[in-house]
Length: 382
Ligand code: GLA
Image (cartoon, rainbow, N blue to C red; front, side):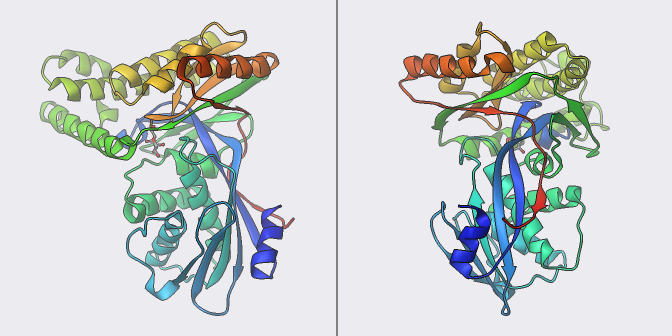
């Protein structure tokens, strides 16, 4: 059933409907919160939010797939997360109100297709679609880059996850057929065309190790510790983005080894992302493949956010017909790998990689054939 039909059944009226997609990140991992570069793409899994105004000040939040029906008073929203999926909606509502937007009471229905916990940004998709829905009941237009910033703030401050800007930004701004190259400091971006005849084969390891959230925040702290050390040598350094590879190499023996490993990943990953954007633009897929492989190795050995299942999935792609490059994608400790595969080989690739992974781990993976798709939008009712 479509979002509109479910909404009508649940709330008895017709909603406005807003869609925001999940993403895969092609390269530039754990660089966004270091003011660096990323190159994700929006994919064809989306979250849909239906909304209709109410005459009172209540916000009712419902979903067919996620458990619980929630009711809140817009004049007394919780200040911090309540520990349920509705936090992503509430966080956005709360930040909008803090910014002075006059929200109307509303019935809201979320319908999510983005696999949860797979590292494909289901939370950003829910935040962005909710933000567009809630804003549609005000008289204010908000440019999409501002929507992305608002959603990140909701996740940082309300939900308490110290994520960077990548997921929300690409969910807002993605473009069909293109990767989205973003400078996470200036927020300047450019679209990099994906060469014709390529598919993203996204392989879900079906594991999400518990340490993910804690380790994410620890990695951020380690990067900040690195910045403080480098800033002593050069006060112009504000983020790892400002550290050159030459400077990194010069100080290889001057930093605690864990901090040096984290910094080394980020500094070189920024360069890889710049190089990959250029190589993709030139259609040099073998270079893109090399850079993706280096990125994975660095995430595994230096940033230490991979896990056995991700490594097995990355290895399982090697040598398959049509394979151009692959790596883990997203925060790590489970979730998905992304593979660039020639379209004519994509179905066979998907079957074989699933079989190889099953044999090595005993786990049945899910494999999705994706392309780069458009970012968030308002839909007409259906
Ligand atoms: C998660 C975060 C992003 C980014 C990635 C790692 O997806 O939400 O902001 O930091 O991890 O690249």
